[in-house]
Image 1 (cartoon, rainbow, N blue to C red):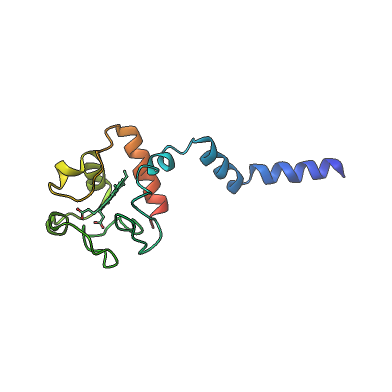
Image 2: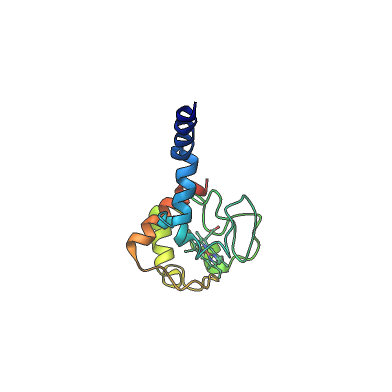
Length: 127
Ligand code: HEC
């Protein structure tokens, strides 16, 4: 009986959910950690505006077009950019270089590995 209980517990601990949570707590999810630089300004819940627009559904969105957010800069609205892995990477690397005049006061994320992890995280969490 004791042994069975032990096995059941081990199963629980190794289950996907538990492992994932542990990953987040231990900081192995580099993308989630990197997103800590964004979350104060960007929610991942649909249409929840903070300083910036919600990033829910950002992939495939035309820049500056989320209706629930009404504080886009003119340069963002006029940019003609569509958000993809490539355009997101370019914007996050150096926002003001990619979209001069953007209202996003984020200095840029230069480390390509962290950037990849962040974009990977967004692909999982922003849909
Ligand atoms: C200090 C607040 C702030 C931080 C930090 C910040 N952003 Fe922003 N972000 C904004 C604002 C404000 C806008 C709107 C900019 C504009 O209209 O020029 C924006 C716009 C965006 C957009 C365009 C969205 C759209 O609907 O077109 C993306 C994508 C984005 N941010 C991603 C990120 C990511 C990823 C991070 C973290 C690496 C981040 N931002 C960090 C404030 C912030």
